Length: 179
Image 1 (cartoon, rainbow, N blue to C red):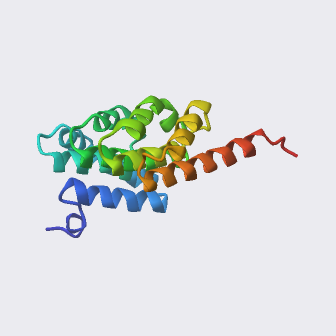
Image 2 (cartoon, rainbow, N blue to C red; image 1 turned 90 degrees about the vertical axis):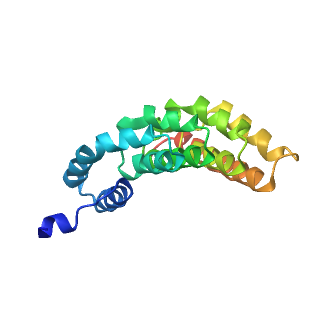
């Protein structure tokens, strides 16, 4: 085995960890190369019968910073497995930190997950993703209602309150005239 092959990832999970490290270092050329090498495997894993493979694939989309895979992530939001829905949301949160357009493009999906998903962790992750989007009135209203709803789990209410506060700060910052 050559020295170069020794460091090569042998599975999607390892490749995703390497991609995340490359992204954090700003090594865009190497990241693009790794994306092209693992693109087909990522696509196949996202469509696998095994929910664990799908969960790894949905998480890998974010680690690879694969913004072009937003449609594939949306598939993860509809998955029967809470692990897959959660992994897709973790990726969306990562992809949308500096790019609110990712959240804005799929806001209705996030509203549905935040308000109706049967898994509390998935609901909280959807709420946290909304923090990275634009402060729109429909989102603010929905989250404020959740924060005030005593029938909701306290951790969900707390997440909704925190995101409402964050979005209001964002709205205030944007509405201030620049000096």
